Image (cartoon, rainbow, N blue to C red):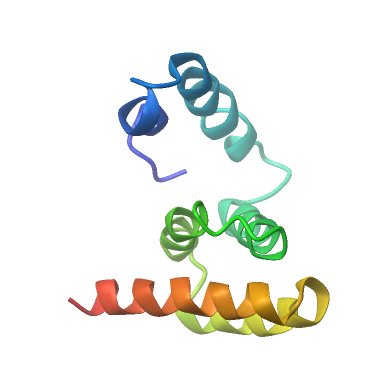
Length: 108
């Protein structure tokens, strides 16, 4: 995954050091790097789960990772549209807001 080493430790290690450690060492350095799925597919799965479970705080981070992992902006928009029928309109509308902010940041 295209993350800097220790991103969780940098982000929240001061508050929850053990959670940061297992996030970096187990989730990002192991689970995300397994061969059975590529980074692109893992990003699509992760973004989908975050959208339908309404985990909007984590969504911007993973939308950016999805772009870095080869998912296009238009594919993310299509994913949100598809998920509206499975996760509900409110979570899809919230995801559109996160996607809009991402597109404005990437244009700057």
